[in-house]
Image 1 (cartoon, rainbow, N blue to C red):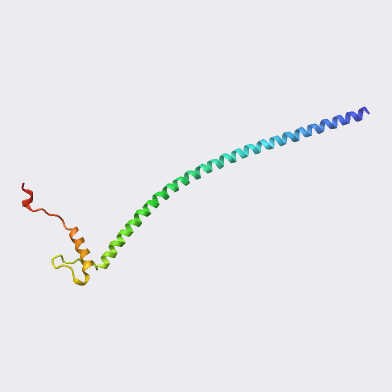
Image 2: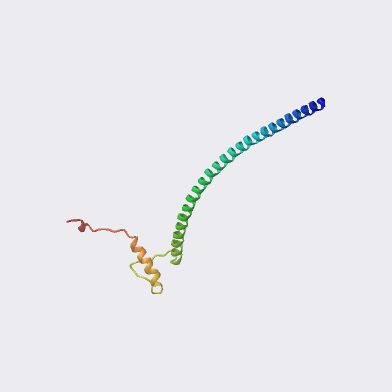
Length: 130
């Protein structure tokens, strides 16, 4: 009976030892996994930070490009208006001395106004003496 009790005690000790080893291995594996996940988390945070910086840079560039688009669109509209005006008058300015043609009075009147606006102002020499 004593021998049986002794074998059981040894068996229990061995079982407890295996259980402690198994528990220690599980703890070591979980610790290694925690370290690996922390490393992955740091890599992801770095990647998110870099991506955010790139996003902000692209957003700023996009804002500049939108402003340039608005400016160029406005210039294009202005130039198209000038081209349309020149095409409607065939690029011919009326002679201010002869006056407008009767059949094209409004268009020629507009040309006359444009012609007068583009003339330099000159003062007579008498006006400068006071």
